[in-house]
Length: 504
Image (tube, rainbow, N blue to C red; front, side):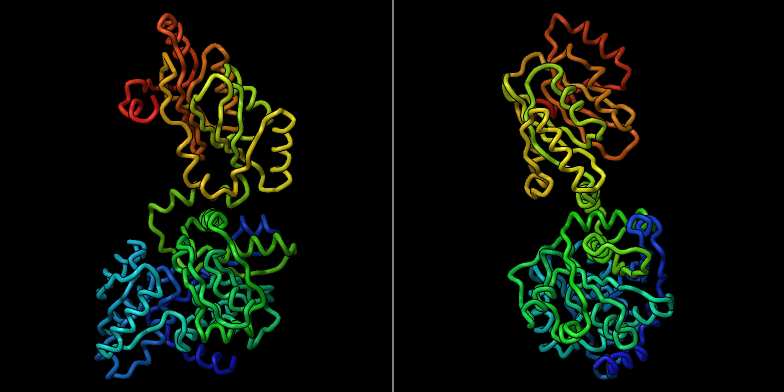
């Protein structure tokens, strides 16, 4: 079986449209993991994904009659772009059926290549069934994104390049998995000649169709899949890929969305490029694999399979990357509702950086606060942090792995507080460095009662804080003098129209 695929891969026609992509060392990640990590840059292809390799190889073998009738495919985006580019290059008609959940950046990229787009259903399965109907009705050739030997062979040319670019021994190649076309092509070529090289599959934890199939020793269809890594959101691994994978894949690693966000950050820090979530799967996987299987001085390859990410998703990625790296702990706790309690709480945390602090006055006894604290990525420090809180007499609830808290609650802390009187709303800005928030609170001191507080460390040069301070009318002049001598830039927001709508 593998010999037949090696022949197909060696004969594959991909370089009419595809490029031989670099295999670059990731210096920062390599140093952190004590191994040489090499990144295969498939994000640098003309459609920013490896998918055009398989699509073009399959379409290059169409007969003249098949070319005249055109092609149709179903895809969440990257395969669609590959088919569209191949069709444009070959001068044939292409209909692309895409789920309605497809990111706009991928839809626009396909449209720019001149293909006809049909949005149908909310998943690849819906789109695939509709595309096959079109194929039967119009006689178009259906170009499968992964369950086709010629598509698999086209993707396998990546392995051919890797071995040529790095002839020295490799410990493992980490490959993202959706339907399985990429990993089956890479595994078939590598295992035919170098069976000692491990092939490690990496899947989203909420779309692990290959893992489920290998455990059951047969293909299974997942009830549902998560859509964060939309390029690999496939409910059932392909039939032909599974046949190859069950003989060639050494291990499957699954990662969650936060770990993917951290991996996107890792790729950015080493390359200044931004991977899509599915494109970062292999990097997330190798970090988890090495945490569970410590080793040093090995050479390993990770596939960056694509860079088609909507710009507006970067907000979520940046917000969750530190949690995915286990460098931020989120928790709720209670502090006494009295002047100076914020400052005392910060002191109890030692020199750890506070990344987030959300609070709104509720009653005269205790305040419920939502806090983020930066740690070094080790579970031991996380435990030490909570030990400190215990010693300080603080009750706490860990929200680091609480999806609802991370997605929603952190932004909903507070609300209206009609019982608060004489409140002034002030926005401050101060140079951001370790301990800056504590110094800010120390400068404010215990003279004024804080009734609202919101702070989030965004990694910028300046920290930004929104503070509600109770200032009786008789003390307004004193308070103004205090603001002017505090030493921080500030803006009065008491008359901001958003204040009475959501906070006052």
